[in-house]
Length: 336
Image (tube, rainbow, N blue to C red; front, side):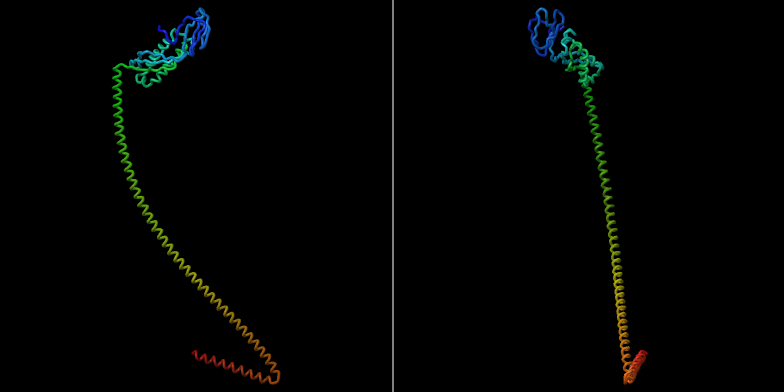
């Protein structure tokens, strides 16, 4: 069994011992476990105390030699890996297993074979990271009683038989041809789709242009009809407004004529009233004058010679009346 460089055996003791940093030494007294020496200076009894194991507490890298593993589809693989571990319990690492490094290396190979046997060949390549994590979890559980913890497990190389490699190359080449044909067919299909889409868009645009042209024509006709309609409406409104203005003018003229007639009638009435008032005043004045003259005449008659004056006045009135009658008879004869 090989001796690990990280897990060293005892040597002849002296009184004073200096333990380096990140190291742990196991001391036995009279062949039995006594204590663990931490980093620093320690004093031991010669010939009684013995340093049996020296453990390095740093992270250690252990190379896993190349080994054979068979996948689920019966393909043989040659694998080698690297394992990273660290001592967590020096006591268990000393008394839990004879050679911790060798033991955990063999455990890693066993777990790796078991996990590869659960996977198909393609999955081994595709799920390499998951395979590493699965191996780490399997080692942790089994290495805990040995005072070790597995930090990482990395597969370095995978080697396959030559016939498997040729088959995989052929498969890869066929896959590439398949992808090329698929891409070519997809390109042809995409080109046909693009062409059809372009023709469709062109026809749609052409039909939309024709439709827009018809819409523009109909809108132009509608606007022309609307303008003509508005023109006719404005013309009819203008004619109606002119008729209204004429009727208003006629009404105003009639109203002004009526007002003029009313004014003339009122003027005639006022003139007649004034005339009648003048005649009434003249008659009143005449009556008053006659009364005055009669009164004076009566006074004169009562005086001496008044009878002669009355007789003269009566004769004068008779002559005037006879003269007026002659004028009327003469005017009547001329009219016939």
